[in-house]
Length: 513
Image (spheres, rainbow, N blue to C red):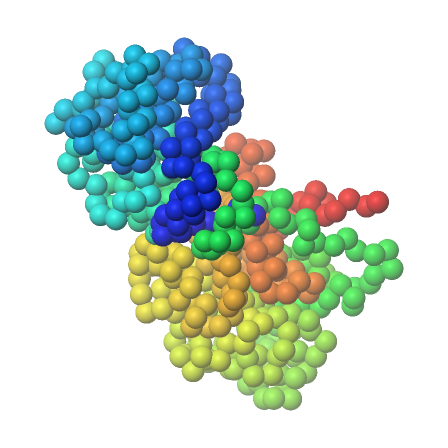
């Protein structure tokens, strides 16, 4: 897992590194050297590396500009042809950045002041590369003036677009665009990931993110604290276990799905399919009596029954008897029956509960229920559902996803999985997790129902927080594999996603000795 830092934590990172004997100029030099290495070895490898490439580096007044000036020297040393364009009066560049400017000019480098209508001079070609080193993580107001115009110049460049640390104008904490931010192909971020890069806007503007090591021991993160961790594919296998040869269906666990209503039977069936494909030994679906006839026999491995019109305590106890995890909500409907089931579950069921879809909307309308969510529950809202829970708008949720996650955890005191371009998972007393996997192929109705089923089945063997992060990672990985194999960002049916899970588990599970 990779640490994720906020703006304030990044400031403390630099301060502690200096206090421990690593001067800021060494940090900047390491950042530039590492960025040049990634450009040469990874990003441009298929195009012959840096040698001979024309690279336009747009420089701002602060340390991000200093990173760009140092990068110009390093790419020159690797055979590139760098051109430095300064968006401010060069005499205003100070501190470590000024040292890098002096070093650049001492070796014959020149700088070109971008005018009131910034341009590169000669029209750039698609073979040219532009580097955004205008404004870094310290930005706390909207881009304006010449710096904003220079950022727009990056955005309009026809060739490869690179950002140092993060695209200028992107808020390091929230990922909100401050007036304007360019869309780049790659972001070379220094020391650690920033919370703003792991949001919808961050993903949209930053392109592929590469982490540049600054040569500072990881123990420093323990001194300054982090805002979370990136949960990656490599983090999944240690949390999985292979079945023993003497296992049986009861030992593998019995999941209960409370889902479906007339016109919404697909949500229930997809949830159950996710449960079974993830490896539950048994799965029972209890649904609206009017929806039952259309569900029977559609999934032969599934046990389907009708929910009672009213649910007394004895009826409920019979319902949950022998069930090791419950998934409630997909297509179940909002209101009376769902609220009644949630009341019983929260009061009388001690095993994991995955609260999804209509069950979340019901919670948002019932503050009394929201105040009594048990700690073993997992809520799986998208931005719209989270907004209803927090009396906000979906836009406000997306404007500060880490903040919204923390508010949901505080409200419910349980594990929360906030869906999105980088799904976030939080739980009381645990570092938030951002999921590294997932693609736009998941933008289809029903994919969230499969996710609820995956998490519910994983709850049969894992505690809720681990089930949520493993489930989200595997769900996203299935979409990533689809995109890699087909070259398409669409057309992945949720049923196909569920059916791809056994092969994925085969790749992820620890190998038999």
